[in-house]
Image (cartoon, rainbow, N blue to C red; front, side, top):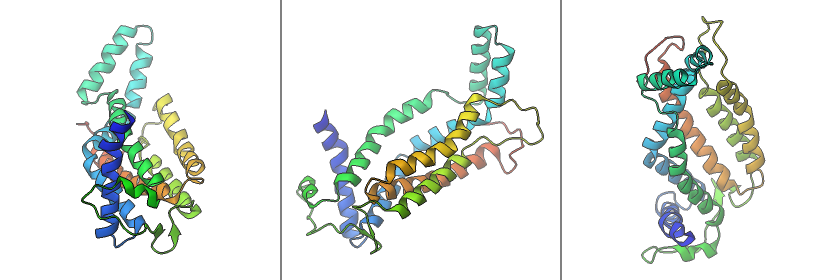
Length: 245
């Protein structure tokens, strides 16, 4: 299984990184990592987009979900029927996020391994026969940040953008509805806005800056995608009771 993972995911991604490093980014490993991350995110865009939009719609539906759970708290069957009718009306699958995670996870793990182990000259043995191996992999990003070593600057930026990503993914609250019920899911989401950046900081501070640069790039990409999804779901006015499709 590990050999299959290596040949199907790790090796193609590693070769793509080296190709970008040699032919596109003029031997700047940081720019190659950014470009590879963006390419992968565009390839996975349908999966990420569906998952993000599903999550955003579920956030917006939390007040209605909470009301259904309260109104039918003594009848589980009616509660389930009402929830399924709500999900069907808004064309949302509450379980689709799990499928997206299982699909994306192997690719994300392979990318992580590429950025962890792909900086050494020994890793060049994984190049395809038609690829010309570089004499040396220069780990400097923009001539100043050593991507083979931890970088506090990239760690802090990654944590900041992780916070930004979490902040804009929260459900928008209609200020005209003072009695809007508070969902446990929404409350947990608001807590994760702060927990996510903290975990990002803790995890990345001891890892090579290459991993942090990947994390930072994918967060920025996710922010742009989330802004687009929010505009679709909420419109220009967060208080609009717009039907979701």
